[in-house]
Image (cartoon, rainbow, N blue to C red; front, top):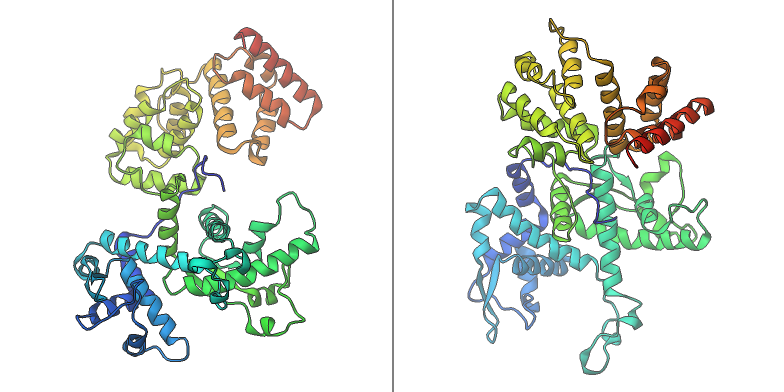
Length: 476
């Protein structure tokens, strides 16, 4: 996942709803209970962990039973310490007191609560990157240093792998046409990290790596579920118990795929991963961020948005404005001859489609504008407005070039664009004989693309010849 291009925008739930979800997570609620329980008699060890003799009492307080109860209590305490719910007041004596952040869980804003939860999330993700530490004492070298190579563990690589998996899960969740809030099969998620995109049939070595990764991810997602990041259905224990039957890394029957683990990013998890991505320098937009900004920021910000997200963003923007003023602002922001202008005008046209007839004066004001007159006529005609002047041939050709340029910027060489190109060439006889004369910055590029996209060799050749003339005319 590259950090140079924006990710698809995520549709986040309201902060108040997310904060309630955070407070209800098993791990944060346990950490808060321990923080309220801690007092002058609570002792910690040199690393700040709850003293071993106090773990049974902590586990009992949390209602934890079984052999793993002390470990779960220790984890909850570690989260409380890292999230600032408790603090060490005397390192020598090993005593603690309630931390400043504890009050935020009851008296703070939703934003405050989510800040505490994010700190807890970081602790859990860090813990999930650490392997089972059985035998770690044997790996201690001179001076108490851990010999990671003897454990077969690279801490940095393990953390990067988990970050990559979580990044891919986020991308799958927010992508238009992806699974959304539906669960993702664990084999597919592991394969997304290990199987090269250009590999046809995975090799046995790659399949083995995927199987190993699945087992690691199974442990990690079990750890990440209590903090509310994911909803997880673990790998069927029967599969792991049978040494002869390895988890399948390739396609399996739909009825069987759930046995290999299913993971779903929760709405709270989407919020948490987006926060981590922003912290790491990724461009990770969220629908609604542009609602209080100007029309120029809206049209530019939505440039790379898929259609559904762009409409949702526009609806929120329009909800805060009076229709006529909004239309005027959108039209003013859509002007320009820069590289991003055609896509701005397309987003403007899409936004105006959501505005009622009360915006008509704004559209009539630009009927004579060479850049906006065409789309204004289309808008008025679609609403049955009277006395709409017919466009000149020059305006028709200019609008056509501008529309194709915008579609190229938005979608690249898509099937929809190919259909548009075929339709234009069919409807306008002699289109290429005139189109090369259009005074638009993208005329040559559009004609060249039309030549590349049109399936008819004769028509494609006409388009390429027209592109050559356009470049010659404009000195390009």
